[in-house]
Every structure is written in C-alpha cells, then in structure tokens.
Amino acid sequence: MNIWAIIASLGPPLLLLLGIGAMIAAAETSMTAASRGRMHQLERDGDHAARRVNRLMSNQENMIGAILLSNTVVNISASALTTSVLSVTFPGPVGAVIATVVMTILIVVFGEILPKTLAIGRPENVARTLSLPTTWLVKLVGPLAHAAQWIVRKTLGLFGIKMDMETDVLAAHEEIRGAVEYHHSEGLVESRDRWMLGGVLDLSGRDVSQVMVHRKSIALLDADETPRTLVDQLLACGHSRVPLYRDEPENIIGVLHGKDLMGALARPGVDIEALDVVALAREPWFIPDTTNLKDQLNAFLKRRNHFALVVDEYGGLQGLVTLEDILEEIVGEIEDEHDTGVSGVRRQADGSVHVDGEVAVRDLNRIMDWDLPEDEAVTVAGLVIHEAQTIPEPGQTFIFHHHRFQVLRRARNQITALRVSPRLEDGSDA
Image (cartoon, rainbow, N blue to C red):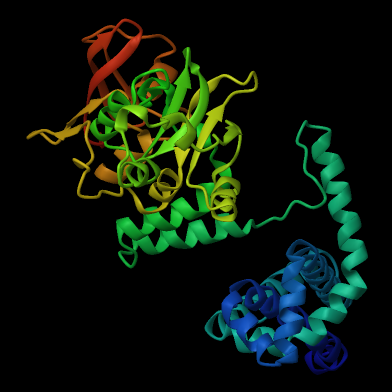
C-alpha cells in the first residue's frame, strides 16, 4: 500500500476523530475559563446559549467527567485506527512506532494546544458556540461518567479516603480565593482588599467563639448597685451596651443600653436615686459558641439586635459578640472617636514586633501582612502554646511558620507578651 492509499483510507476517519477531540478539548477549556458573571448577565438578557452554559456549569463535576471520558475514548480510537492501518504497511514494531509518533504530534498540536489556545483567548464565545453539542455529549456520556466517579470513590474508600457523590471538584469559594491570591501576587489587588475579600469568604468557616470578647474582658454592671453608681460605671466603661448581672457574673439578667439610660435621665423631674435601672435593661440574647459568623451576621440583621452573649454547651457564659466584631473580620479594626487604635502590637526598629499575648492572630496578620495560621488558635499566645505543646517560660524561643517567637512575659499560666520576628527567609519549623 503506497502513501496515497494510506492517506485515502486513514485520512477521513482520522480527521473526524481529531475534529471531535479538538471540539471536546475546546469545550472543556472554554467552559471552565468563561466568566460566570458574564454568562449570568447574558442569560438574563435572553441568550439561550449562555443559559445552556450555566446549566452545564451547575453540575461541573458531571460535565468534566463526561468530557474527559469522551476525549479519552476519541484519542484512543484515533491511535488504535492509525496503528492498525500502519501495521499492515510496516509490519512489526516499526508501524507501531510510526503510529505513536504521528498520533502524538497530531493529538498534542491539533487536538489539545490549538483548540485550547483558541478557547482561552475567547472563552465566552467558544463556550456559547459549543454549548449545544456539549449538552448532547453530557446527556449521552454522563451516566458512564457518573458510574466512573462511583468506581473512583469506592476505590478511594478502600484506602480510607471518603468523598461524597455531591462533592465538587472545584469549590466556588476556593476558586474565588485562588483568583484573589493570584491577582494579589501580581500586584493587581492591594493587601487591604485581599484581606477584606478573604474575610467575606471566611465567615461561614469561623465561629463566634473565635471573634468574641472573652468573659474575662467583658465590662459588667452589678444590678444591686445604686443607680448613680451604675450611671457612673456605664459612662466610665466607654461601651454603649453593658450586661447587667445579679449575685454572680454568670447570672446575666439584662443588657443596659446607654441610650435607654440617658433617655430616662433626660425626663423632667427624674430623681436619679429613685431610677429603676434594671427595668430599663433589655432582655439578653444568648447564642451558642458554635454559631458560625455568617449565620450570626444574618441573625443580627434579621433581629435588628447588634449584641449577643455567647454560652457553651453547658450554658456557661463564654463572652459576647457584636455586629461590629463580625464586620471587623471583613474590613479590619473599626475605630471611632472613643477608640485608642489597635493596641498590643508595637513595631521595633529591627523589624520585629512586641505583641501582647491576647492579640488575635488574624489582627497580627493584617497589621504585618503575614500569613500565620488562623485555624489553630485565636490569639498569638494560643498559637505559641499550640505549637510548643506546653506553656513556655519567659525567655524561651521557638521557630515555626517561618517566624521566631520569643516569650517576654508570663502571668501564671498566661503568656502576656512576646517578640515575633519578621519572616525568616531560611526559616524552618521547630
């Protein structure tokens, strides 16, 4: 068989398979690269192709599985066809070698690089153009891809790796976070904007116990004190809302709002000594310490109440959380004319910082633009204790997460002050 006979017999089916493979590769790249916002806007404008793209992306794992399975079948079929034809003309291993070289070049160049380059350059247009054949493909091959995913999960389960059938390969939050981190590294997103966007994404993964004011730091008023004493203490503490307790700090009977108290005092002829301050207090709102910040933010907005007391599973008071505490997780420290600024972090001439132990790791990261882990402990002191697996003595030094931590002061079992070095280029965890 001469070369023209080979081309005549092999060319049409091979071109068809390569064309199908190129279309599938372009569909995969364009669907994942297309702007979700642009697609949703086009759908709202009545674009049917954009609606198909959004429907495909709503079950991304099934679509990707169908595309990968189809592309694999097409490429294997093209390689098998080429090998069978060339093996007749070139007996022995020579035909297989020639087929391997030819198909590698054709598949890589025309079946992968060329269509994917086109799809990356114009993802929205390509995705809309290929949305109809991709929909047919997913309907045809989807059940097989679903079965393949089931087999994969069962196989992984044999090694102790559990994955639900509903688990997405790409989580939307992580996709957004990755984009933000990438643009930040390229200098297109400022550090402050990076923290704000990250704070929004982290709300559902953080509990109120991680941002609350601990019970040791709560300003409380004894309901049995005289009205004048209560007024003086409220003005002195600097807070607009203060819990009232009776007999013991754990027994919170109400929350006194400064506006309610000032309104009562402003009434004509009021006698401050005869004022019933407890009657002015509002009913306390108790929430569990496991409530995530996203749910609590929605609860604050729904109830139009910006102040909640946090309790553990036994009903014991753990702290308090306000709407401002949650907003500060997004925008950073909010200061008004009565605030003294972020305290507890003092920069040193050598680049290190003196940090009070009660400073939150998240606040230190924002102030210094560091990346200390925030899921292991809430405060810097807690992070050191977690990593050291002991309560260190003053003077002890540890290196972890590419920073050097030196304990400066300790009060009983509490680390009160540390020196933290800037990031060590050759830092190693210890």
